[in-house]
Image (cartoon, rainbow, N blue to C red):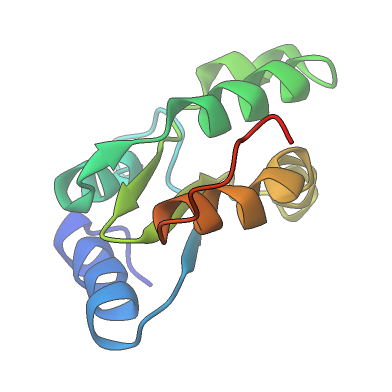
Length: 120
């Protein structure tokens, strides 16, 4: 997909609002170049931030490379779905998804109304 915020935002909206995706994962466009607009596109369509996901991805990635701190990736919630911005590098994207994967089922359950205690 081209690095155009409107197209990225439209794709996220379509995946969630029309296709019913529970999780939307983007790859790339989270850096510092002028064409890196994925966080802005994501910010435009989320209802709420999900900062812990992006924070842990940066923190764990920093253990691998100090360049991780320049990631502008954000994660958020639209309706009852989760949006996760991953880096463009296949290796980094795989690593970052691995850092948050275990939390996704629980987060989705909570979004969909699961009343159980989080500590159980």
